[in-house]
Image (cartoon, rainbow, N blue to C red; front, top):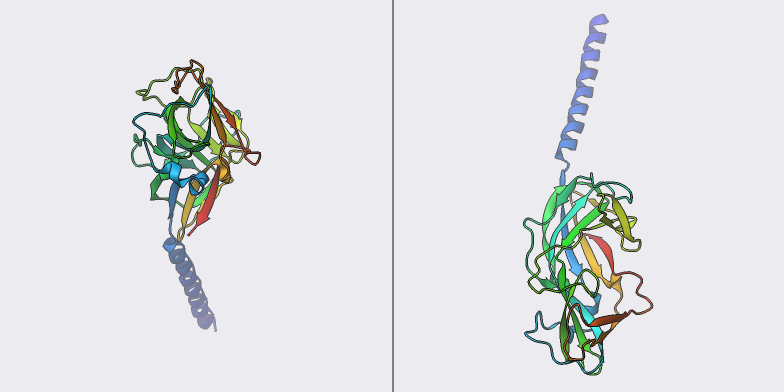
Length: 266
């Protein structure tokens, strides 16, 4: 009887060990990476397709007077790099997060906002809570004349105030934008996160082994009604002069903030 019990014990142990090994093999078969794709969406493009048929103007047509009323259609700018992190950006804290870069090289090419799509990349599975994005200091605002939509302007601007000096050859970078569930942040001079815009947030997303996560950064946060941009000719020369002329933005009432993010899984 003792011999039978001993053999039975060995068989039970073997079965348990086999079961454990099977579980281990199953866990080892689980994918450790998933795909992520980052792109930009401009909801104004569907309503103002004619205005987006150009990427750069050799010269602007004359302004129509002291005030030129236009519709905003897009931005032509340089998005350099995009990173994501499983850590969360919080106001009052330093940037000690571990970031994964989605861009293989820093982009130096200026494009319309809606033309940005970065190649899908494999990153570790998990829950991601923050995104950071860099872009250059100067950009070109694309607008069209309300009274004649065939008349288009490409207006040089900077990420600073409207009185900031403008140089079309400026190759500097604006302050990095850090997005999390709390909103859009920037690092202050002490290297501490400060909340810039509470509404411009990313609620987090998951990277799953058998799916692709597409993160869409939306201009105008999905609003399809364009802003009216009044171009105020301060020096009365009927030309747009960055750093001199004034732009007054009249946003539609449904526009609450500049950006948002949409997450989709395939």
